[in-house]
Length: 444
Ligand code: UDX
Image (cartoon, rainbow, N blue to C red; front, top):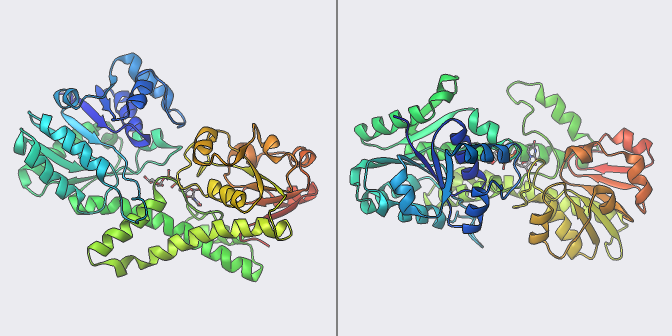
């Protein structure tokens, strides 16, 4: 039988999962507590930018296989498999993750579950959450032991969300402890992901805590790799070495590899920063905090890059931002995204603004989100517009249109030809040849 799927929470993760599952041929019902979001999705209007996703959303809606609702009753009635895709943001003023949306989703769904079904958590959660939620299900679902829970972490990257969902590196599923329940849950998920498994995607089964840890430890590793090269950048700065050459030379060692070894302004976004903090908080609760003290350093190195960028800009302006004009290129936390959550670029722009600089920001996709997050900053209509009259230009998100900028054209509009490359995205020789004073993090 073809299972009917539901997706609870239709943000970056849920909307992508819903549209991709519909594309695989499933009937999918998405639910969100945000009625505006649901209305927009149902109208084929994706509330955020993600390459290729809006087309997939419309295709799903047109086929009739993809629908959205705000009713948990309808979701419970419709679905055989319920994917929980709600957010787990950082708690205000704490390192720990805020689990109120995950708890809320399961508590809202469970009382309506009257027939056998599988609830599949995809949200990134502190280890131990799945076991607790299995208890919630058992307590609140009228179906009792026929409403099972599995944990199936999602590794998608923004900007590659569709590709990462349809062709994942691996599928990891955390199964219940009881053997019969585990076998059933595994069988259901093997069928749901049948196309991918047939295409050779590794399918790894584990217990709940291991599956939860796979996700946070993957993100901790990636964050560590980025902070490692950024720590090397600090040493390069102190010793007049070039971290981009260093990174290139390291990358040819297969054991190290070149991915996530890009030095610059460091990591941001809705995942890496909050996930490593929540991981530290959880390890502390478990009495294993010593194991993760290095992540504190990873976080610190990352934050120091933002401070260093602001210092470099101030230095370039002779020691003060007062009365000086700064053009900022980039607001999203990375290219091909409109996400400004914990964005290094926007953080640097705001900090320069707070120190008296007249900052104008431009980003190809993240303008609305950036304006909402930092209403005090000025926003330009293009890269040239943001750079007009600037005493220094900062490249903080490596969008292709910034990488490919013509140094001569930009040179025409600025007050002074000073460029700081926060992402090591430009060719210094080309910019210097066009009369620019080029500086970057970790390079002479
Ligand atoms: C990340 C994980 O990659 C993904 O597997 C997980 O599911 C969610 O978190 P995402 O937040 O979309 O995905 O972004 P990612 O591509 O990992 O980049 C994170 C940050 O690291 C960005 O700010 C990026 O600019 C930065 N980065 C990345 C570097 O500074 N250097 C690099 O070499 C790579």
